Image 1 (tube, rainbow, N blue to C red):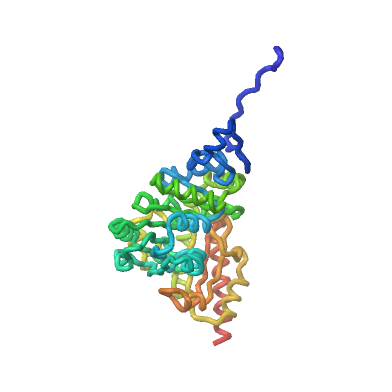
Image 2 (cartoon, rainbow, N blue to C red):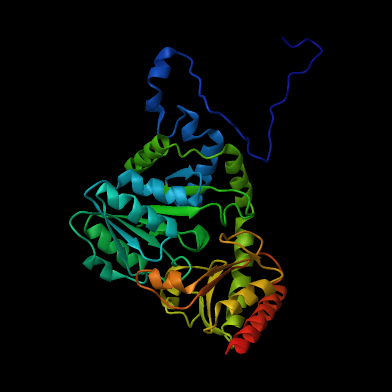
Amino acid sequence: MTSPTQKAPQPFRSLSPAVMRASTVVFDSLAEFTRRKERQPDGYSYGITGTPTARQLEHRIAELEGGAHCVVTPSGQSALMTTVMSFVRGGDHLLVSAACYGALKTFARNWLAHFNVEVELYSPAIGAGIEKCIKANTRMICLESPGTVTMEMPDIPAIVEAAKRHGVMTMMDNTWGSPLAFKPLEHGVDFSIEAATKFFGGHSDLLVGCISMNDAAYYAAVRETQSILGQQTSPDDCFLVMRGLETLKVRFAAQSAATLQIASELEHHPEVSKVLFPALQSDPGYAIWKRDFSSSGCLFSLILQPAPEAAFNAFFDALQHFAIGASWGGVHSLAAYYPAPLQAERAFPLTDQPIVRLSIGLEDPAMLLADLNAALDAFKRTRAAAA
């Protein structure tokens, strides 16, 4: 009890969201405990489906995506797998873009195919032609726009129109453009997937994914799958994503502008055979990008002049301001390498040459261009010496 001279504590308010950690949810009565599953998909029955910290993040992302519902998962990869596992069953036919995230393709070919799911890869730049791939048992079409590494632009409205005619669900990995540049749900896609690891978090220090949708029945199914598969997301990581969302718009704008500047410059470099970036007018996907997207991301790829492996080693060894790493979307610039054998093994290969992928951060674009030019000079010298 408060003494007569002691003031009651004032309500606590903060600009920072609370981090609520829990494995166990407690109940006021046995009746509530026995009916705990009825609390899903929004309520709390066990820590595996999240705490109020996760719900707050889900509400923020749903609003950003223009959706009614969202489920967060421990990574972008787990968001893709959770969505597929929520609906695809043995006997179903699954269509996956050949340019989708590699782990999704591996999961489909090496796991789902053994569970009697018919897995088919289709051309990444497809549009209305997807209708020829749809079968009576087709359950879902997995999209990514643009494609991972190779940056092909599918005609999403045309694919969605064909899918809806046949009652087929569509799922799109929208991480490259984020909902700031493109909102899949507004274009009729059923599930918008983001690797919040990338732009949403923004600082290369967390792994989180999210699945946004409008259909309430789909939402209930995805939440149930999240629970059954144990795809709980750390409340601390949810907090970090919410912090990242506060600066998303300014980071995205700055990184997109710098990326377009750098990609445009590299397009004219003699050691660059081709820049893969839909926001360039020279890109085959430019017309679709211009029609559907309001901006571009921070990720693009390069095909350099044919050269031995030593020249690519020289390129990467010369980089001073690009770290070498496979992720992207953070404030630090990154470079990654995809060798020729990987391209040759891919269905619908874009090239038989190695691909260099660049993620542009928040460093000075002039400094990054100087770094890339120096690396290309090292590439040129090594290539010439081997000729």
